[in-house]
Length: 352
Image (cartoon, rainbow, N blue to C red; front, side):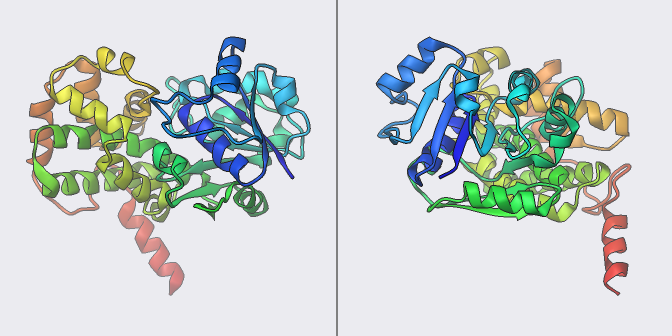
């Protein structure tokens, strides 16, 4: 059976380890400290974060990268987006041509504004770039751990690599689809976290399901506008990594980003919210990169702009959400520098 290495003892990293080990694969998770290794190997998962979960025998933890990565078929990078570059630098010398390199992070790097596959490609040897693939989708980890049905999409520029990763990652209650639109799949997973922050604010204000549905849908259109500007297909943003993940993250109490939005409405400071949380709300960092991208592209992204003002400029969340929901209506696909009309016209001509 294939051996899998997972870099990162995040909730999602451990969850992937559990579901892969449950299907009989040998999985080693790398932890940064021996203290954490001993705790996980001897005491099992944190009962607060993962209640009623036991680790399968095929799952183990190690503090040695060489031990984690020896004779492996794939390495899964399940780390926060802002530490991806640091972690891939630690791993890169252990990578082989036969190994899949899977990014399971959903975010953009602040400063470079790069997607995780681009960050990985920056650091590894060029001949390994074709092995990079990205995993995304509506995957709330607590539901996945319970064995509730879930789906995801894995994307790679090489269809053979995508199918190889699909076979490896698919489990009894975890269905994985394939895609070749790496840009769209990564942006869907990253951008939905931004919209979920606002959806949490809408819920915190008690504005109801109609308002949240409208806000979320406008968010999806904004996601598609940026996606098309960066070379993605808007159809990908309507798939599992975009619309699918958006629905889950904007509606579930298990969503960290939704939680942050609700807490901001209560008047709590952002830093106090994030430091009190288990795990990372990726949207908080991602929105800074998305805002910067929008400025450089001169792309109209009103939701991103307004939410950025709340998180980083001290704007009043109540006023901002009221402004967004009360904005003047126009055609759904119109915005400054948006290319949605031209995209659909091009594809209509192609079919004819």
